[in-house]
Length: 87
Image 1: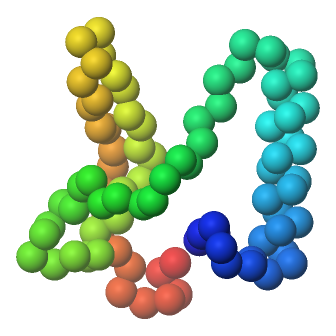
Image 2: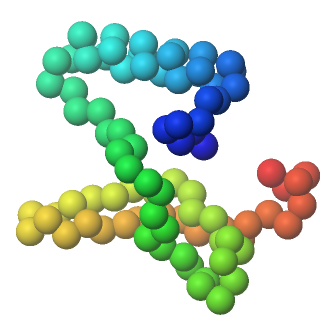
């Protein structure tokens, strides 16, 4: 993960620039486009099994904000793979 103040490897810089270019192109084509960005430090907001952290992973997730402004989280949970072959 990239954190401000750290110098990422060249590959990470190139990938970040490629993504930035794609977003800039999309904004030119669709001026009203709203692109989500990570703004701030990572904060754990959900742990399916707190007594065994990192034993589950979340897949195919989405957040929906309802009319009063409450965020709702929908996702598929899977046990974290126990071997590198499973990844």
